[in-house]
Amino acid sequence: MLTKTGNFNAVTAYHLINYNELLLNHHLKKEEQAKQHLTELFKEKGLQDRGIDRLKVTAEFAEEYGFLLNKKTVQMFITKKKRCALYRDV
Image (tube, rainbow, N blue to C red; front, side, top):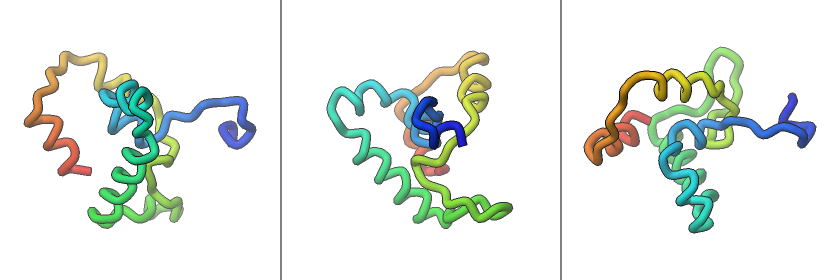
């Protein structure tokens, strides 16, 4: 509801899943392309809605920023192999 007012920015599934690419995608003007790709991945994996409330799952789906904070508070190492695995799990 808060984001609908236009006074707040929401953290979306795109922001969490593509966190390490946000600045590059913005700079290269590839945000919309990346969001479309993520939404297509959700569809390929059968993730149409949340199930409990039928809210449609897309790259623009609002998420809790706590998911990102949890990942950033433990020691992490990103490798090409891990990055590819992340996309397969989506």
